[in-house]
Length: 159
Image 1: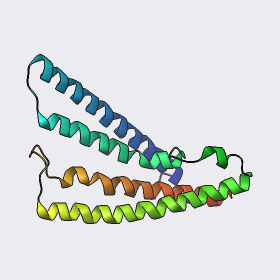
Image 2: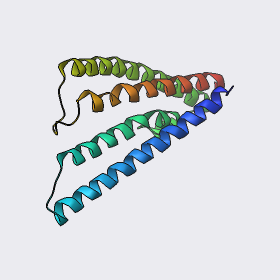
Image 3: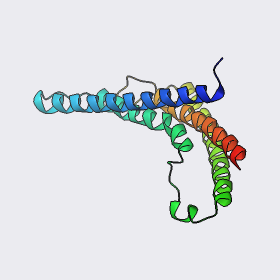
Image 4: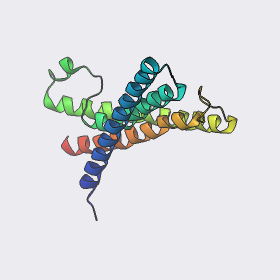
């Protein structure tokens, strides 16, 4: 059986590779779209749509590892001037705030996606149901909750 740390490490690696792959795929799609538009005079709305949604998925999938690395927007200047115990306490408080915020966005995201699913709205190209790109929000914030819980547990252990 895998330990929790090994499982966590594998999850972080998988999310990293998925985000990088999605960004690379988006870049390739945009490049092909530009070639098609300027070299052949052909433009497809779905190419732009898929590239946009893959970037959204990449960003939301990678939110969790960013939380763990403390790489989100923060006030480092003030934080590092504090004593180490105050830094640890603020780290825990910050993770709790992220947990609460992410839980709220997850619940609202689930509600939003379920409404989009019921209504059956399509994206601008008409090829996809709008809930398909929208489901990235609850997925991403569920991952954020998992990582916030991990940072809270680690923070309490180190305090």
